[in-house]
Image (cartoon, rainbow, N blue to C red):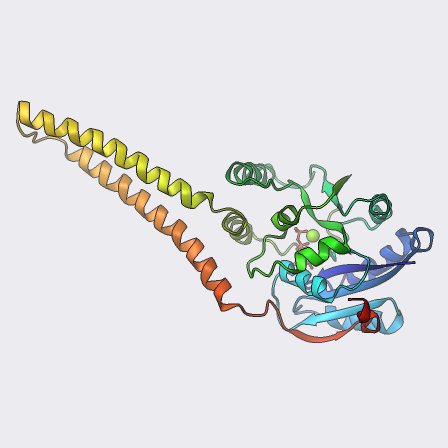
Amino acid sequence: MTDILLAIPCFNEEANVESVYARIKADIDFAGLGIDPEILFIDDGSKDQTVQVVKQLAAAHADVSYICLSRNYGKETAMVAAFDYFHHDAMIMMDGDLQHPPVLVNDMVKLWQAGFEDVYAKRNQRAEESWFKIKTSKWFYELLGVLSRTPVTPDAGDFRLLDRKVVLALRQLRETQRYTKGLYNVVGFKKAAIDFDAAPRLHGKTKWSFRSLINLAMEGITSYTTTPLRLSTFLGFLVSGFAFVYMVYVLIKTMIIGPDQSGFPTIVVLILFLGGCILISNGILGEYLARVFMEVKNRPLYFVEEKKTHEADQQKK
Ligand code: UDP
Ligand code: MG
């Protein structure tokens, strides 16, 4: 029997938790695969009845456990809580809204047993998503690909099976503002993909707003690559180069023809353009500085309110 931890981050999923558990038990052939599962719900500071529902489930089923975080930290941090708790042979992560069909886990486990260490589900084009969302996400990945040397796999989210080695590696990456999709590629290991169609959310609505997506994109870039810093240096050189050439031209022209009274629009345009460049470079610097500030504080990533887990096996850790 192999021990597998199924980790499910939940934020306001009161209407979904029970169905998630039922589907996991119905669709995954644990006995056939030789798996002894621990199904861990990580409550990420839900404001609804999620905790109560999870507790009832844990009282009724010995394979269910839970960790309740002290507030809402975001899914990325909720997953760190699962990494920290992990003491199994492998870990599967899936969302708590049944957008990740549990039946795929059967194939994931088979690939893992065949020797792959990071088996991820790759989402096919989503029918219900707007053209705008599909395009912007495509551009974001292209941009990230241009800026960074470790590419991020588009459409591969957090529906994954991770081998013990991968979890132990990820556990060592303690940055506070996490871009987990990038981190999977930072740690490496043998990867395999499975295609799937994401189901629509069972109940409730997505926690991602446009603003939080913009923030995630910024965090994705600034935590994953420092190329923007270099780009602003290049931009500085480029603009100064042009300015120097133009200066020589203006000097020579002034000496030969005399001072030029016109040119007010040129000056306004140049000042505005350079002002813009300076502000952008400052902004980029600030983004990275803020990141340094967050990291040097070196705070714990989360605090646990209460938990009930299969700690008895902890010796294996
Ligand atoms: N989630 C979480 N903390 C948050 C936001 C989301 O633990 O602050 C969980 C949520 O309960 C779900 C998963 O992360 O299980 C994915 O969230 P959601 O379905 O809102 O995102 P989407 O599927 O739209 O990308
Ligand atoms: Mg979802």
